[in-house]
Length: 189
Length: 184
Image 1 (cartoon, each protein chain N blue to C red):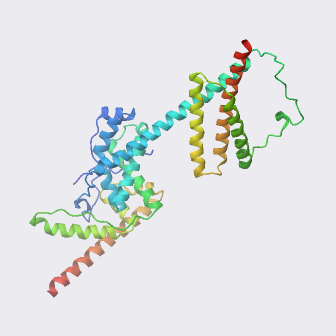
Image 2: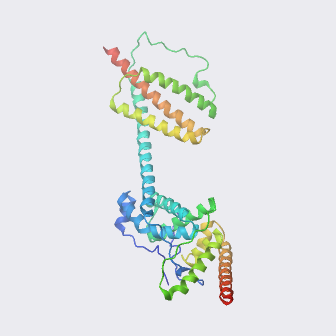
């Protein structure tokens, strides 16, 4: 089972220095966590620029509140939560602009089929509304429970369960219809 | 912040295999660009915090200075005339909080008074001059905030408070100048 790209170990010394306001330590934390933070923000907000804004705001908040981090849980879990909270509040403030999907790199021939499926899935994910996409991503990929997701939105667990169920159904439906359409296209050649 | 080991359970179901999707990556050079923005914001906050702290210290010091100077034995020069105490002395005024418009008017009056005092006051010792500059910086910061919220009662009140501190500072310096002249 793949682990979250956020699962990065942070040494105690760097953390302690950052808590004291050491800029070099903050820069180290930023460098280590920026790609994962931006990736989650991008997955939730669907827009590269919005993801950059969310990432910047999240790190500013994190460094400002670093003294509040008690260290009874891994730093990456705390940092990821800050990023997700910012992404959710950004999406609440304004609808994210047009869909912008990640470019796929050239991939070996045996992986072509999987790439096609990935692109279907990317497109299907992008077709979901903000809340459905966020809930399915947080639950299925980041591993949050319904109670935790409900807490992020200030809603009940049934909100999370309903959104997840609806999002999965829409994703399956989208992918099935895409496959059917491509199968019809193939047979028509 | 509410922190939990949230999302650490990675064994949850992923029936659509979303985890297998390629991880999006930021454009080359954006890490440095984002860090520059974060660093600038953090440094601006630190500078502001430092200024606020110094400003608070300056205001407190100016009050202490004024109190100390007022405690000194006063000479009775003939030139100094006592203002007559009228029925409308401040202590008898009803304690009604001033409106925003009143605060604005008071601040404008105070500005005139400060302009006059600035012209009167002579050279200041460096430690007093530092307090003066800090207070003026704080007033400028409040003015910046007022440009965004011109009707904010809290900001006008804050501005007036800072102006009063500045008046006290000038007054203490004028008194010091007077005492120096009187001792000649």
